[in-house]
Each structure stands twice: as structure tokens, then as C-alpha cells.
Length: 297
Image (cartoon, rainbow, N blue to C red; front, side, top):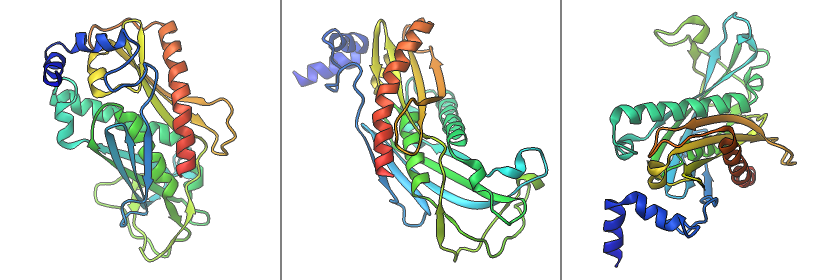
């Protein structure tokens, strides 16, 4: 019976999924608007000043942080803030994502990484990364995420991993010596290195603690936190990230990122009412994840 079910799923995936949805269930046993558990483990990489592993269902992302000095230029606004950068690597896992197109995979990964960097740049207090008394220098926090296993929710897992890595990061309290920027860098973007014998002493400050949950659209049904199988069969997907005050006092969150994609199976029409319904589901599920990040960090 199990082999027959697997064959039916492979040959008729849409019909296979619809049989579950008609009963208010999903292939993994969840309800339609239930999200998978998120687990976070901080500091798994001993050689990194900040690192974390986040797991959303069967999607696992590990993130490490590197800290270097940024020589700020004289342009307006540049003298007051540090920076956070992000890079994402899915390796061979991306080749099996959705339609298997390498070009599409690269575009998706770049989109996810860009969104993560945008959310972090909005939620981290970049002004707190400026070095006091160092005259035009600030911290550049570089985050590198690697997807170890992929089963949907890549943006959600990458963001959770980055937030946890930043929460574990400690910035050096002082700088003894710096050297010139690397070859090919503009003067306003010259990154300089610090001596490595200084112990970390200062945490990264957050303006908001972000968390995200995607919602896929299947006809008139909404599925929270879709798996890769469900993502591939969705008519559209609404991916939202929310930010809560780091004090943990609750209150209304701020919508810090929103992406609506309608390029999946059947290309569903996404009007304002559908987006509103998706956001309501995403907000509820993201709040639980935010509380977990707050407690885990």
C-alpha cells in the first residue's frame, strides 16, 4: 500500500495533495494553517564569533558570522552606520528545487539572500555598529548561510538562522590596529582587518526581532509554512517577515518584508483579500517563531 501511495504521489502529485486538503489535512499530518516546529542551536561553529543552526521541518540552514572593520566614506549617511551583509549557498540541493532549472535556482537563492539582508539591515541597529572614538570606522558583519537540507521555507529558515547567529555574536570592545582595505575596493568601502587577540565584549543591538512564515495558495485553501512538495504545486505564495520589539513585551509587529509570487502551478489570482488572509495566518505563525527566537537567543 505504501508503494502504491508513493507511485500515485509521483504520477499525480496535484490529485495526491488535493485528497489530503479535502480532509483538512496535509501529507505530513499538519492542519492547513499549522507551521512546522523551528529549532535553533547557537554557537555550533567554534571558530566563528557568532553562529547558529536553524531547522524548520526538514529544512536546515547553518549561519556563521565574520566581523571586520569598515572605513566609512564622507557621503551623507555613511558616517553613522555599520553594515550587515548576507550570502547564501544551497550547493547541489538547489538543483532539485522546483523545476530543477539552474538559472531559476540561482535567481531564487539571490532573491532569498537579498531579502534576508534587507530585513536584517532594517532590524539591526546599524548605528550601534559604529566605533566610538575611531573616526569614520564601523563594524561590517558578514553572514554566510549554507543550506544543509531543503524542504521548503528557505527564506524562513535562513532568516531564523541569521537572527540567532547575530544574537550570539559579540563585537570586539576595542581595536588595537588596522590595515588598509583590500585590492579593488573603493575607499568608501575599504574593509580593514583587526588583530584577533581581542576578546568579544559587546552584543549586536536589534531594533526589531524578525521572524517569517510563508503561506502558499492552493485554490481557495491556504497552507502555512509549505514544504517543497506543496510549494511546487501552489498557485501562488505570500512570504512575509514581521518584526517585534526586542524587549519581549509583545505588541503589534511591524511588517518588514513582503513578497507575493504567482508563478506556480495554475498561477492563482492574488487579490488584496487573499493577501490579507495570508498575512493574518503568517503573522500568527511568525509570532510563535519570534517567541522561540527570543527565548533561544
